[in-house]
Image 1: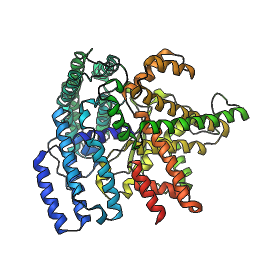
Image 2 (image 1 turned 90 degrees about the vertical axis):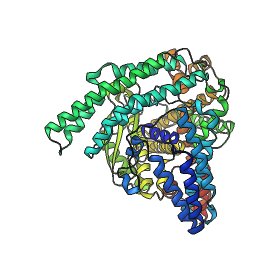
Image 3 (image 1 turned 120 degrees about the vertical axis):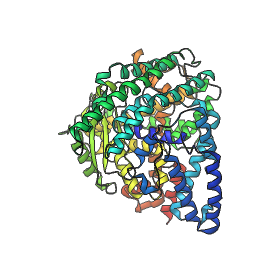
Image 4 (image 1 turned 180 degrees about the vertical axis):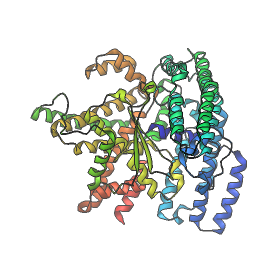
Amino acid sequence: MKKIGEWIKKERKKLFIGTGAILLLVLTVVLTFYVNSFSEDRSFQYLTKVIFQQELQGNTLSLHYTLKDPEKYGIEEEDISLGNFSRQSLEEGYENLKGYQSALMEIDKEKLSLKNQLTYDILAMYLETEISSEPYLLYQEPLGPTIGIQVQLPVLLAEYRFDTKKEIKEYLNLLQKLPNYYRSILEFEQEKAAAGLFMSDRNLEHILQQCREFSEDMENNYLLEVFNSKIDRITNLTEEEKTELKNQNKQMIESCVIPAYQILIEGLEKLKGSGKNEEGLCFLPDGKTYYEYLVKESTGDYDSIAEIEKRVQDQIVSDFTQLREIALQSGIGEEATLENPLTDPEQILEQLKEQIEADFPKAVETVCSVKYVHSSMEEYLSPAFYLTPPMDDVKNNVIYINRASDYSPLELFTTLAHEGFPGHLYQTTYFAEKMTDPIRSLLNFGGYVEGWATYVEMYSYRLVQGDQNAIEAERLNRSIMLGISTLMDISIHYHGCSRETIAAYLNKLGITSSETADQIYDMILESPANYLQYYVGYLNFEELKEQYQEWMGEAFTLKDFHQKVLEIGPAPFPIIEQYLEKEANL
């Protein structure tokens, strides 16, 4: 699960050039000059360069996590800022998206190089999809028990690079901005409440509990612990400087970070009872239409909900049939037993890196640190996640593991395949080395990113040594459970299945605990279309593989297919299919 890095990309979408109509007018005039004076490729590259530069200005956190050296990309850092989540800011963002769409239409795509045509198509579809969500601006939800800003922002702050004294100063200034940033989120939630679109009280209570736990124990707040540890490792600071910085950080946590969470707590508590809907999106006025947008945006799959649902059902039936055959032939034990399993995550990553060489192009040389989620956040954060590095410095990578997940040896292996090799770490670093236009690093395509990681997670089961029938049964069970979760997501948010209906369905599957059923329902309620990123994305990669094999015939190799989709990079699946077919016909 790559949620931490993906949240930054979703934040950028809301900040897509907040400088207003003057910038767009200047851009249009200059772009017209470029179109009339230079080649179409140069005009297009100028446009994407301006978008890239302008979007990263005005949000220090996004800039920090996207680029290690902004000056090389012509970006001058402005005042330290976390951005703004106000409705006005979001509305300005949509106007700017439309401006970029208009500027893009000035380019003659047919005159572009093949690589620029690919970027053009991806950007055009991205803009069209995002602009379509404008009527549903207040349906967005920045807060949530698992992937909300209040959970993920502390992790991003904890991982803030301290390569220079300037970055330490930036970090401390960012902490100072936290109260106003959370005020803007609170104001947005108040507008949602006024429009009858506020979250359920159950969801709200989960978020409030997280905020209380994060802010109640100042002395053991992990932002204090992590900062002190990082400062101690810096060699070009005197002991006096280190002490002073630690004191400044403690002061910022006391005077800004904790108060920011208290602002959120106090404001949200006043909104209790404002939520009019305790069930899926379809019970909101335009909820079904918004869900259709979310599915396109989240998965990169542009089929109808009915078509997607049918494909998921067919895959579940296929997987279950195979699982039943294994059970009839050899029986299935309680848990797959592995031969000499490794237990050290970094050793597993090295093993995976070697094992995938036959079926995947050579990995980029990187260093990966495996860290563990702080105990104070174990209950709320994902079982594991990969922290996306800056696009111009992909050598150093971080994977977090949540020890609360209590992984079995097989689960740890396949999880590290999902997060590391050949999953998120491998895909991210490989594409960064091949990427021809920096703007590609700013566009969020969760279906590709999470679909790829799920696809290779399923692939990784074949790399495990042990009882192959039991291991394959585990893989099929994993696929079936993801498929069922996807169907429940659609059932809750698109068809309106109630909590009781879902509990009865889970009971038939052997999940008899009402508490567990409630947790599953709440998790899906919190994050509409989230499961679809993983499973529908995974199914798309399987379907693309079959299609590419049909096009290539005897010339097909798995390694060639993987190389092609990795080089195309994150994109909507219709575009990936289109360019794969071009590659096959070259």
